Amino acid sequence: MKPYNKERLSKDELFGGRLIAPMRQWLKNHDIETKRYDYNADMAIITHYLQNRNYPEGNIYREEAMPLMERYYKATHTELGDDDIVELHLIEDLFAEMYNTAVYRLHNDNNAFTFVDLFAGIGGFRIALEQLGGRCVYASEFDTSAQRTYGMNHGVVPFGDITLQENKDRIPEGVDVLCAGFPCQPFSLAGLRRGFSDETKGTLFFDLRDIIEAKRPRIILLENVQGLLSIHNRDEVGNRLPEKTIDTILHILRDELHYYVPDPKVLNARNFGVPQNRDRVFIVGFLEQRGDYNYPTGEGIPDVRFGNIREDGIVDTRYYMSERYWQTLVRHKAVQREKGRGYGYRIISNDDFGHTLMVGGMGLERNLVVDPANPNVNNVEDPRGELNHAHIRVLTGRECARMQGFPEYFEILTGKTPVYKQFGNSVAVPVVREVARSLLLYSNIDFNLLE
Image 1 (cartoon, rainbow, N blue to C red):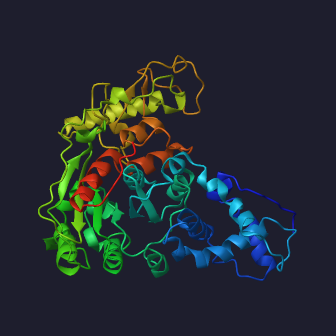
Image 2 (cartoon, one colour; image 1 turned 60 degrees about the vertical axis):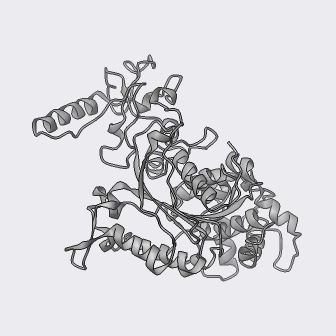
Image 3 (spheres, one colour; image 1 turned 90 degrees about the vertical axis):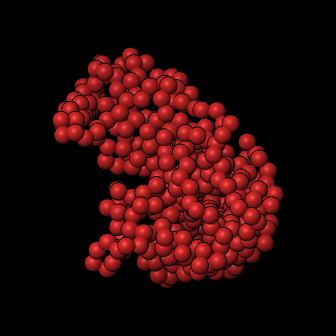
């Protein structure tokens, strides 16, 4: 076996999967089957334990984490034998860089209340609740790219498939808040409005139902697209049924799980200091009713426009459209107008609120910017060909983060496609924070505003 020795793993090694090769080799050397080896699952157990080891929730992960941590230490210290004893502090030091993230350093002392972060994406819910002093005791996200972004920022790898009973069993009981931005595709026009008949994602709400029943959080905080309120259930062959999907959800939460659930509310992010028109429906529930609950309105929060969050300096030419593609968009919009449709690109000015960040299709073209600041646009050699003469570009990753209210210290990983997808699928942090604050006040749960 090739000699290998690491006293402390880098964040990229921890969250980027570079430990997979030495661990696979260690497993083979010990005649252990590698077919089902899941690095992210191991790191989820280890990082959840290390972040919660000083709290009761750490005991949930300790029994699984300790032998895994020793195994990884010996896989990265090939001079050690199976019978060699390693001091615990050396094993823990191997993973210590997981604490060295801006988000975690800022919030690692939080303990005003506890929460779990399901369908976590890149952690928009987590940031919002940590800004109120909350401590996250469990996170779950299926997408591996989002898992990496989550890990690099929050210092913990989310568990993966939430349909697995072993992952559900790891969720602590009796937490204060359960957050879930459960998958929106089956409930929106983009998902063909299939509702619960969607075999891959629609049924995930019923996994969420099982978790709520088993763990009994004090507060439920759910977010979804506005279209959830209007779609209907479908039968096994896709025929539309009279009952709406939202009625099924409310029946489950109110009548089966016995939570106090006020009527859902559509909130627009622009009313909460976010430079984006983004309507999302919030569904909240309480284990204990204390009178009528009222959603926040955003009243008194100053408006933020696109000009407040746009890049100050010169933006790289890779964000500018090619002339060929730009002209294609112009022609497409003209054709759609002739047909009486409003589809097509949209250009936003500094005084505008941006349009809803969307994933795929024409999503990027809904928020185009005229930006003549880069002098190289008209003379740079670009593999896409000549760049457009109108100086039209798409949003940068940082602008997408700001459109969703993410803090400046949030680390954006490279690669435009995953960045746009991750922020497009995320939540507007300030909206979630205001809703969560109102829920904590209603339930008389202490919190600390840590902005």
